[in-house]
Picture (cartoon, rainbow over the protein chains, first blue to last red):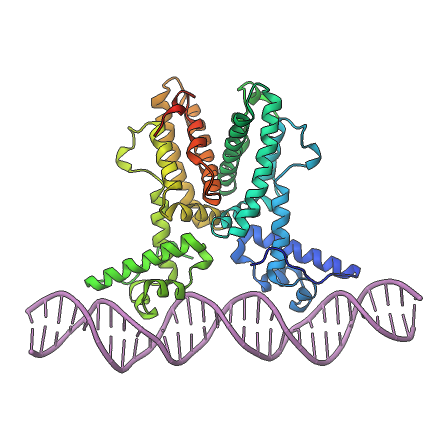
Length: 197
Length: 197
DNA sequence: GCGGAAATTGAGTGGACACTCCAATATGTA
DNA sequence: TACATATTGGAGTGTCCACTCAATTTCCGC
């Protein structure tokens, strides 16, 4: 299951539109039914496209799936523009919003992490993005509490992200679960947890 | 995909032994390759058994898979005998040991939680066992810090378990990750985190 | 609007899959 | 030991899957 794959390229407007329809269908199926719900027939039915059209635009089924997967990995992080300036509260808010928002991408991301448990290629990708995120959280910790050693800040960041991930899983399985209420408890002072976002 | 399924029953010794070999093979495959790595051929090859023998003992492939899955769900909790008496440190230790131990069951459990994101039947099972665990952690919190309100104790328990789950995922993807070092930080006083288990 | 490239269709292909069937054999019991 | 029944292997079955292909239509720069 190669992660990088060169597919055919769309050159005309209709081709690009079809490509988008296919990706939207794949995204939806992946989020709703998981990886085993994504069959070529399901994709092409959902996208209203013949199998031939699919292969005119993608090298394989996995090609389309990975496109969506890459998207999901990247989407976990709030706009990279703000990196280096955002507060812990901002970061936690963004993570909670990502998990509890209506986009199907969060579900895909967590499923993906689950697959990382058996697929080393996926594990590597997920871990890489995880480390980037830990860095960003650690920076925010240190900005907020300058007395922390870098090691201590990173430990807290790791813990915070672990908790956010765990809470996110519960939230996605149990719609009645109030993730935000739990997540704010992770912030340094309990005073901060009174914030009403 | 029915969760409860009645399979044929082994009556002779050899049948019971074969049954165990099949379950061991299923457990190993599920942990190592994930659900899509568990094919009938893989199971029967691994267990050194013909397909006919398999169906003499199990109603379907899923029958065997669910047997293992049930086992994984139950195995997350340390010996139920101790419920009501164990300290937070004990519970955290047990969870870390479960995740980082050599048994394949932890990997299966986390994969399963991932599948819960798209399969409501699985989600229900996972959530049920999760709630039981939260109760047990909340009890331990209250025993350790009697001044906590029950709601506060439960919130802390939920947070703690979320973090343990998240850290467990990282630990299973990254063998160099020191889960215990991070997990002890979750304990109430930083003094407690100096314990050397 | 002409022409060549791109896009589209869907029946067809080969392979993997879960599961069946049954003759041959092993097992426990009286 | 003899019998009934449990267990065994593995070739065979139907289904579903990803993917191909050749014929046809659509697109768009000129």
